[in-house]
Structures are given as structure tokens and as C-alpha cells.
Image (cartoon, rainbow, N blue to C red; front, side):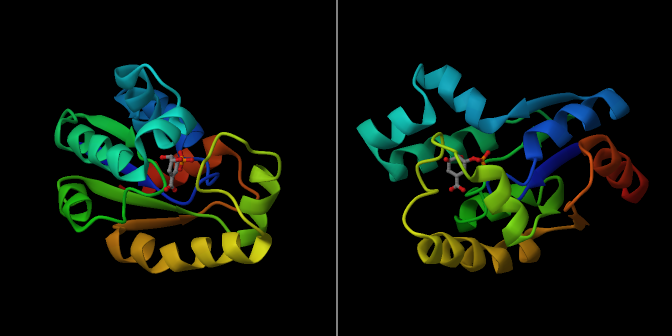
Length: 160
Ligand code: S3P
């Protein structure tokens, strides 16, 4: 079983992946951490030195090389490229649906995400623009507002 967790930045993909990994006894990978490890740079550094396109290429390469039996916590922008959306079809895609208010609350002081920038209107437009792609690629949608990661993980297992 190959499970992809998708959702906007701050939707809780990494923490839920960890919980799911315990429940299902499956390994998990966090794509951003994996890219940081391979590049020996942080995500902001990769964006700063090589640009978003470079990061997106690394994301696609990694997606192509993911193991069959695992849980993959994706980066929020993984759904942007058509090639990636095709690759996601090789597994079950679980979209963690967080509201705009929840995302704002969680990312209020975040400095680690280069695309979480600009004024509130820019951010909201970015968030809203992505929603159709998350929905379109999802096999399972889980609403995550006000839920603990372990509850979300159990709800996912019940839907598999
Ligand atoms: C991005 C989300 C980030 C990271 C990068 C770009 C995006 O991952 O991949 O900063 O385009 O939404 P998280 O969703 O884990 O924050």
C-alpha cells in the first residue's frame, strides 16, 4: 500500500504521517526533509539559490522513486504539476482539508516556507487557487480542523 498525504502548508501532513505510520506499521517519508537531506540545504536555501523550478524538479524525481509500501507526506505544491498528479495515481491520495483560518493560525509566525509570503490577500489567493487541485487529485478527503493528529490518522485508517 502506498499512501500520499496531500494538503496545503500547515495542514498537518507530517504529523499525521507519523501517526499513520505507527497505526499501519508502514514506513513514512517526508518529502521536504528528504529533499533537504539530499541537497544538504534547507528548503528556503534551495529556493533562494536555485529557485522554485529546481525544487519542483527535485520533488518530481523523488516522487518517481518512492517505495511501494510506504506513507508519503508530500509538500503542499506537489499537486501543481500534471506529471506529479499522474504519479500520485500510483497510490491512495489522502487530502487533509484545513480551513483558511486553521492554516493562518498555524503559520502565523512561520519563516520556513518561501511561498507563504506577501500580504493576507496574496496568501489567501494562493490558498484558494490550490483547493481545486487538492480536491481533484484526492481519493479520500479528511476535514482536519480542530482534530488531533491521532484522531485524523484513525479516521484515515477507517476509510482505507
Ligand atoms: C510548498 C510547501 C512546502 C514545501 C515548499 C513549497 C508549497 O511543504 O514543499 O516550501 O508549494 O506549498 P509543506 O506543505 O510541508 O509546508
